[in-house]
Length: 233
Image 1 (cartoon, rainbow, N blue to C red):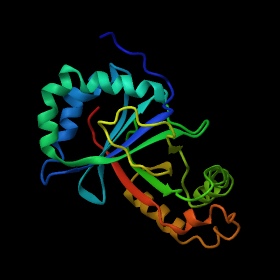
Image 2 (cartoon, helix red, strand yellow):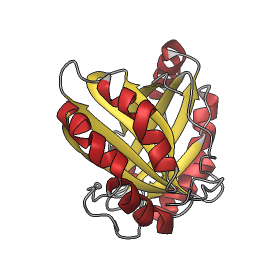
Image 3 (tube, rainbow, N blue to C red):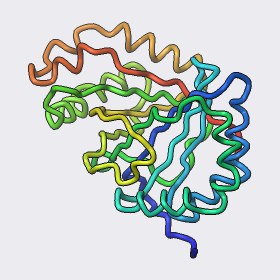
């Protein structure tokens, strides 16, 4: 198969959290480095990063992107139907307890990642559940109110993604059936991330002027991942 053209923008993202067997977390980065990254990028997927979770020694997280949602199905069918995956899937699967914790996301306009890998430092991923609220209203409020709050606490919102509304066209890989806003920030080290999180947690009153149609989402604590890139590239 000829090499696929990889888009310069990553408008669709898979955020995949794998639970791995004790003592086997290092196996997956090695397989990615030696086999899986090149094979996926050759068919149109972009591996933005592989990560260890600072808060879970049995968690391996990775991020796979596409230029648009139409690229995802063909890329996945080509990779998982190809020789590289078939040759190494047993080794990968032997390390994994669960691989179904995955989000399929699309970038908000102008707020997605470029093609560069997510390297260095600590990446903080905040997953805010939007079930039962006006999603468009929440996105407006987030951009107008919350982004500046993050800045006041010493960080920047680097990328913003919403749950992809198109159906999962590769059902062999499950994705979570829920609506989320996911935003990414980067810090030079764990101490800087901790200081930011403490400052954000100490902020008072930022919900006071939130519209009633988004308030339920603000009452739920977000899922937060603190990720360190695996030194593999």
